[in-house]
Length: 90
Length: 263
Image (cartoon, rainbow over all chains, first blue to last red; front, side, top):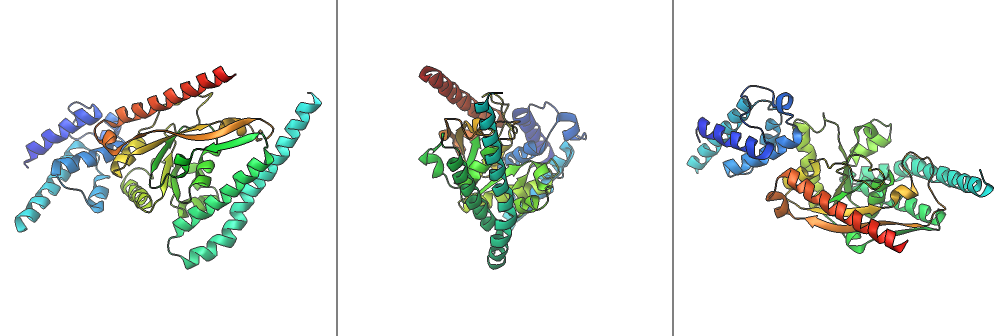
């Protein structure tokens, strides 16, 4: 997945699940949109759908420290790249 | 104040003192005497503690029943049989969580953070695997640890019970539902069992010190419906919370209408 594709998916999730339209890329989501830990869990489950695989506990824990949209996109991109590399190896 | 009313208050006061003495000393003595040897011998310390809480509070309610001859406890069999379930309840009284602990040998719940700072009791709560509700505990990586622990407990046959109102409702009215439990259920790939509690607020009125041991009423717990795993997957968290709330409201209306008709 390209970064643009990931960003499109994440923005769609924000609109559909959290009713946040076009979140600013570098603002703290908690402060700006009241994004809380429950939303973070929901987002993780949506990210699993986007990636088509379950996240490990360590990956989930890493996500819980994320604060901005750009950080989410970086996070998903790293995961997508890892999974692609793994599938190429196999 | 009439003599009858005074004697009723005096009886309630004395029985309440006795019950709370058992409740508190039970934690201090029974737990230390039983828990430490069990804890040292068994690895699953949380399961042992939950079982001890269960036995201790079961005895507590046997005493409550014995001291309150006019109060009947009616817990439906389908509620008693619940295992590996996330149970959503309305919240009327401080008695609600301890009644639920007395029903299920393995159980966990989300507890107000202030209880964790109570000496000894707070330590027991943490050791029993109960989940603190504070924002610091439910934010960041700790949140995942708690969710995974809940998942493990459900897999081991335990129940998670939650009061999505967060606080006790007033005069039969439901407070708005927090979304947390609905998200937890989705995370754990399970559904929700909805259980309606009635009359615990008559037995132990919010804001009152004493139990009403002279009243005549039935404290009941009834399974009023479920939200399946698919229900939760196919709707937003807010929609699921609304659906659960609607089921509770409908049942409360029905029981109030039924009660009025009977009167």
